[in-house]
Length: 525
Image 1 (cartoon, rainbow, N blue to C red):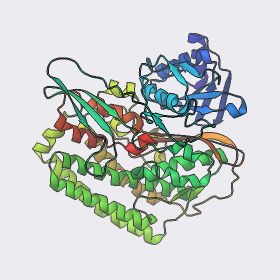
Image 2 (cartoon, rainbow, N blue to C red):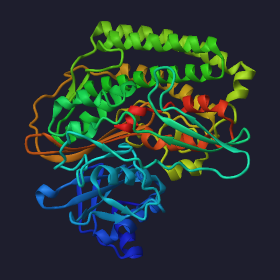
Image 3 (cartoon, rainbow, N blue to C red):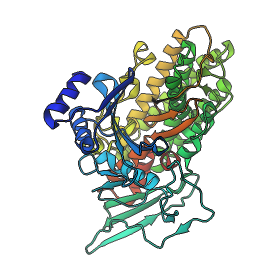
Image 4 (tube, rainbow, N blue to C red):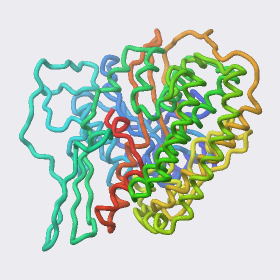
């Protein structure tokens, strides 16, 4: 199947003809349709490509007398293209037919569009606020509209956020958070329990909403510093997706050496986070010794990061056009030597975990996320790969990974053990990839600064350690950002956590939570 076949199918089955088709890049296609055809077109691609909505966002174009635009994004994996189904809607009564009753993965995005742009998704059964909670702005003053003005005083409403309540004898609720012990972010978890089993979990986030997408507007290359702060433990992945969007728009050819070093850093970020989560899973079942060993491995990798880049979190490396810092002979020697030690320590850690019957009993069969549920909700990243959804941007948009023999890591059971095993396999695969990248590392420059900022739009993306990270940018003639849409895989994956605990008991929640290890800040934006 090719893209023309899809367009023909859309015409045949729904009598929908695109107003305009734009293919500005080999991996992006923009399909503009009439407002009355938007829902049917999205449902067609959702069904025929068998993929969720990877993103769904709005743009304020009223300055250009174009009203608002909506973009619903699907990944056509077989074609290696991101397919944008786009529609313009009028500014007088901004609304659209909700997709969420048939495309469940669109539900959270629609709530976000309503809250940030005031565009009403007609028919969406969940109209609750997402990030602004009970704050009340002056009428028509929506945060992501171009005419938004921050008021001197923000009002509040006594309207209560309505949680789903179970009814019947013996059902009670356990509220947890939003303030938690330790250093994790704020989130409210409300459990409904019948006896011991959990029958419902609702998660309310948004407590660390910072207006991040608004902060990008009016900035250009320097906004990479903002991207690094969206989710601190994925600083490199976020900055990489951001600069790749700019590089696409500005038509920048990144030197090959820089691309290899970027890939190495992306795998190092994956490794230190996976080791941290493996230790966290051990902590949450009371297995303290391997947790301490995992902490030492994480420290070894972050110390290595500092020696290679000057930052334990791999910050201040990515810039539009390449990298700020090169790997010299000393850094390459440090990397080669460290990888050998880390590999040996990690294998001992895995042996400890696998040899403990009590540990395996606690994680085997706990927190099962079914494949169909994950597909419907748009779960991505390692949480999806743990329940048999074999999707990884490194595999679908291969690049350097193709010639380096990348192996996708997946499981099928969808439980805590499966997510643990995916982490273990990905850690070991990252070690192999780094070795291969070093073996192919070419000489040459690491930065191409010979480009001119220009107007355009495009999608930057990478497979972060949790899952896909997407940045869609539009710039003006001077290269200043007019719209920035950020998608961290945590945004949809919190729903997976809410479903995987059903039937388990509350004491199992911490280990289920750690097996996902999602980002509060990456979700709240």
